[in-house]
Image (cartoon, rainbow, N blue to C red; front, side):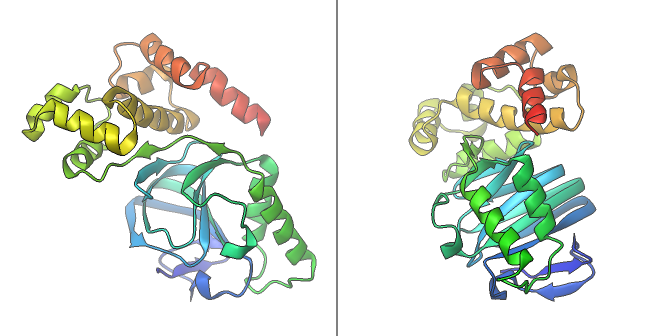
Length: 273
């Protein structure tokens, strides 16, 4: 597993003090802060401890448990212990990572998922990045860590991920759609590009993800849209970037998928915070 490099409680991969979170004898270990990168990747690795990744700014994308996770605002990615995963960072990123002893949160899911993060849980996590690694278990810091675990166990699960198939051709299509989300090619067009029968791709996608091609691509578009809209992009620009003919067509898709238009969806999440 990689070492984290931290200095003054900032997530810093260039300067600071090396430590291996799995070796810290505490229920929780938290690091985080800001960094500016044109693109950085953490290769596939796994932890003995479970991991929560909370992104407050910038683009962080993880691949784990046969899925790509572009974590939307007010959410965090939960990765159970010993699950291999990789991560890429881009732009001006503010990210916080919490590592949890497996037996400290036994009720949390045993598969990767997106958790909705309450304002209280967010503040607790940010606070824990400021306490000593070897905090006093019986003192104030230990009690805060216990409250953090209690709140984490109550966090609702949201079905916001992009399933990543094992099939090599489908993975190439997924990578291409993430690189160029405005590409509106149909499954038949992708089949021609991949030199394979459309029925073969359709069956493989349904078998591995349970989704049609349209629903699969829509899930990716929703995740990208949530991230860009939260960063201040307009509905019009997001619609065009995702290849929709108009903002109204994008809003219609979004409403059908999440039950409300983008502006209302994000406003309600922000108001809740």
